[in-house]
Length: 315
Image 1 (tube, rainbow, N blue to C red):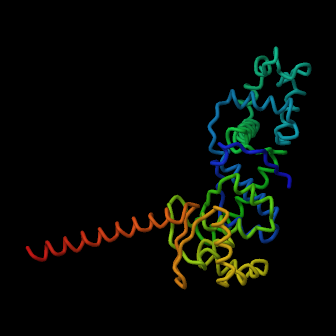
Image 2 (image 1 turned 60 degrees about the vertical axis):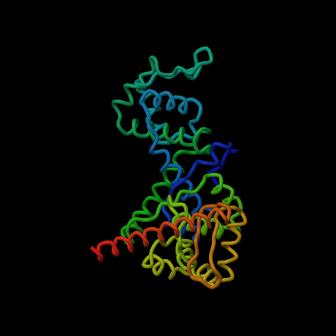
Image 3 (image 1 turned 45 degrees about the vertical axis):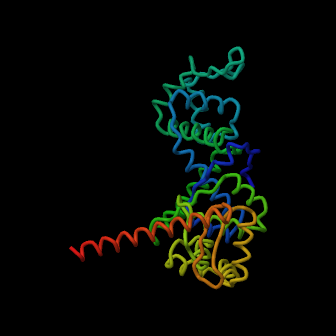
């Protein structure tokens, strides 16, 4: 794959990538390409939220122009080269903007004026800065070979999302821990574990747990958030083997057990009951206590309602 990951520190265990559920469907066409769409959409989605000021943007742009030309967008590099040829950008060929070991590329370069005068260059420079921050060690901790690859994949994924939502309404946007996504990507023989994990997270959202069913989990596994989407997706010959396999209780139970054993989720269900309770990983008793607490709360509300009915029926 073109997208490579760096070693992640403890802080980055709690960084998340968010992306549309429908992108799972792309992993059935081509696993590597589908996962790249998911990861690169997530990177861009994260990057676009990063705040900036133009001076920091300019400094980062010049550093990439001097030292990371292979990462910088080709269009932006060409615009800087043209500006340098015209004399609108004054470059430092000897020291690449470093003065006594400190990077000071702005003074006398004309880069700030150039950015203000060229909206396309400014837009691209801001995005370069946002991608740099997003993938830095304090954030997602990725190595990017080329910004254009991220942008191209994001635009492709965004179009897939838009087409999906035109037909089926707003898609679910699951958030997956970056390190888990990368660990599961390393072994695509276990791609169904990742699909199921993403699908379950799309159901849980920001809640502690949800009640659901195995057919609903299967639907999310193929990237379908609704019955209409499931009906449409299930006609795809590349998806039908997955539906056939996990429609059997044995295989779905085995998949859910594997997710629990690997501490991705926790699942509780009575034997032969359709409904099951699923959460992000926690100890079984912890999930049971949450379920009991909700049950007690509902019982209390029921008793309060009955008490009010009794009160007003006797006055």
